[in-house]
Image 1 (tube, helix red, strand yellow):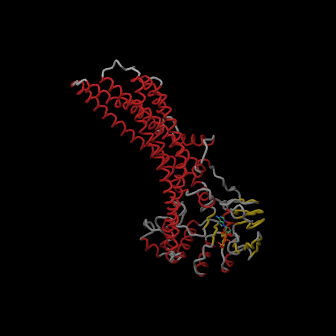
Image 2: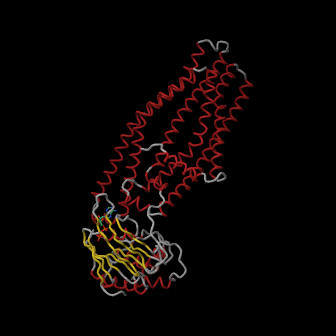
Length: 577
Ligand SMILES: Nc1ncnc2c1ncn2[C@@H]1O[C@H](COP(=O)(O)OP(=O)(O)OP(=O)(O)O)[C@@H](O)[C@H]1O
């Protein structure tokens, strides 16, 4: 549900500005060509519409030569209209694809260049299926836009012209009847349509939920198999399917009534032209015409009136489609992507850049729920070079949440986080709790999240050494080489411990001054854990770790213990290394 408010128009203008950035841009030229084709189509349609009426008169007069000439003329018109419509459709498709590219690239920029993807997917429960909005809705919107906008611009002129022509042939009664008929059928259809529109929206949401459930099974196939949870998963998947089918069935029923009304309007419209012409014929206005001229007039009038009605009907159809576009553009995801100018920004400053990653002062934070109690209150500490910190505490006490707050993924309730280190090899790198692997070659796993090697990055000999240190050199053989683009889902073919070790190889490769490790060694042996932390020290990486194992204390200088109910304590384990 939305309103055509000022904000909507501003947003729509923004979309237009993206699509038509300059007067001489390719899209403006394309659109002008489309407009010209639609205009031409209207002109040719007028002449095509008059072809049957001329046949009535030619055949009525049994005029052979006129018949032959008229047939040639009709063929020429048919070739022209076929050519114009095909070209128009082609230009529309090109415009659709170009518009989709421009808009989606713009949305991607918002989505990926800020932390909006995180917000929309993790924190914002108002937003349903952001992926579907970006991948499908934009496409639908551009498709509709390309199909109707030029026609919509031309339609007022067409309507005025055909109103005038109808008035010429039937007097005021013709246009009046058409407008009256149109008004009644529109009000009636609109009433039936409002229920349909609501259900269409619901159907799309359930469609997305159903697809997401299947995606969940696909991504967690192994875990589901170990649990032998097939029956429950089948039930859950069927539950979503039933919800979707339920809405589809209700939609079909509502569409039944709507279709009945639309068909009635269409067929009534087709006899309306004769009813309208009957009035001047019976009142003797056309008494001086021969029978063949009269049938030609009836045919001509039928075309003009029916076309006028269809112009109105199309206008209504198009206005519904415009509502659709507006609805899509207004949907929370698209709208947030269009409006957002990054809510989160790190406090970065160049001073102290290498010496300190961040400084936390009187920080209070809680989980992002309206009713959530503070996890930690008034926390103050610095993460500086040489001060390796381990964060401990019971499960769910807020350890990972602290990392989210200091990395600005979650807002703080009170206090300040001053961040001095940028993300990357010159600043800080986070190894999240769930090891993240990407698609592509082994090298791409290691250099992630950068595609290109920076100057001074380790060479292949060093990379292989890091892999050996992490007992992962067998991967080179398995993949066929560092650069072989294997078509693997890396999460499915490596063990959790291997994924964690590969994440450390990535960390060694980038060797940033600071690293935050969220339970990054929970799946590897104590011996391997020691080896990995030793290499971090050799590479001068100051770490902040989250973990449950006591063995971790040995590699850190400070322990930040989160005690629950907002309390915490910071203990020095040993003097600064
Ligand atoms: N996206 C979220 N929305 C709302 N609440 C969340 C969200 N993520 C985590 N929480 C809640 O915040 C609290 C702290 O979670 P956090 O992940 O920080 O725990 P943790 O101390 O790291 O636990 P563990 O040792 O089990 O990893 C938990 O109660 C958790 O349920």
